[in-house]
Length: 241
Image 1 (cartoon, rainbow, N blue to C red):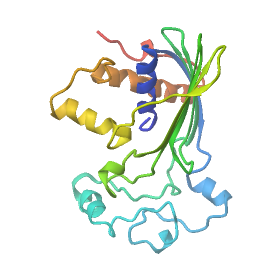
Image 2 (image 1 turned 30 degrees about the vertical axis):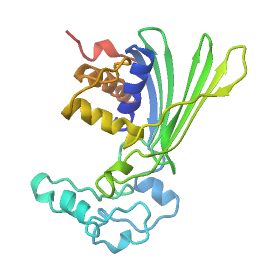
Image 3 (image 1 turned 90 degrees about the vertical axis):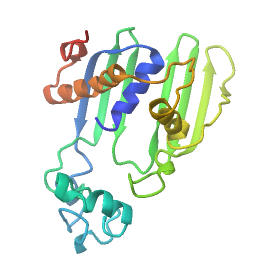
């Protein structure tokens, strides 16, 4: 849900529509203690900070060796009880890490979506198939630990490729202007919309609270579908007035 709602928001915006029906499958195939034991891992821990079993674990996040992480999370634990450094291979891990989702939209567009939450790179690949051909886009982002470094590196784009395949023409690479700042230049624009003076945008990219609700509804419907094994009608989850 946390990862995919951004993707579903983009799809709603790109195709100018809303989700109608969602069917999904998901499983826990990489994270969790049982999966780790199958791969021969024998050292386990509840949280990484101060635990010798976490030494050498590339998935471990220690909070006491980074001043910002320590102040943001470790020192704040008495306030909210949130522990940022828990093991992804510990007991009680239950969130799916491998998911497939089919979505039918109100304008009859269809989405085939695949998410793997453990791959060695950040980013996404998407293809649009339409009446005039196909567009493929690949975005590779830099891995980033939230509050663990330079904020501008969050979602920092390492590479973008956009290929266009006309129905009866030669494929070509599309030219585009790359923005500056986090998330491919999106962060400065978003922050200016909220805290600065918004500028006129012919593409109407600024999302409102309803857009946010509609994006997360795809994920909510997908989670329900995984639990029940049935397709879910989004309009049966919530009513907009």
